[in-house]
Image 1: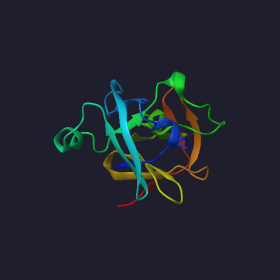
Image 2: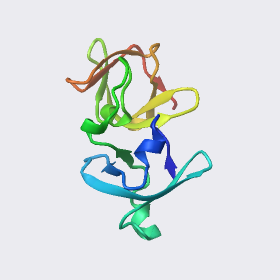
Image 3: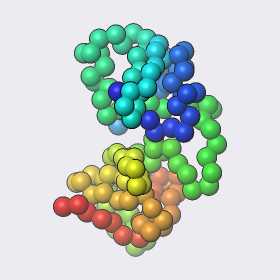
Image 4: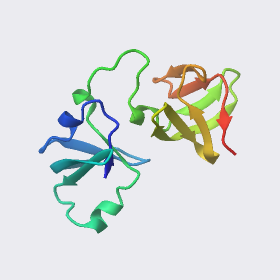
Length: 146
């Protein structure tokens, strides 16, 4: 099952659409949608060449993304999850809290998961600045669930 993170699922998962498979280290493998149907709160998607459970199990936890040239323009202050993964998180004094490992989309709001299990709500109350060029997120404070 694919969790929907896009505002355009009917376009992104149309049969024949090409998506990039993003792991924690790269975003190079291309997948082609062979079939797609709604399932619970997500989608059941079948990709060309991935016709067994064994081939698909390695994809669990990965992101599907589109090439930058095909992305919809976002409003100021909006970001694609894969843009945030790997960014350094620090406070305004330069104290580092690690890098973004995962981006979790919850009903209430998005949460950034850093190394060591640190969770940062992706809300203006916690995020001071996002520097895409410098790959840095400046936080006002960090919430640790431990």
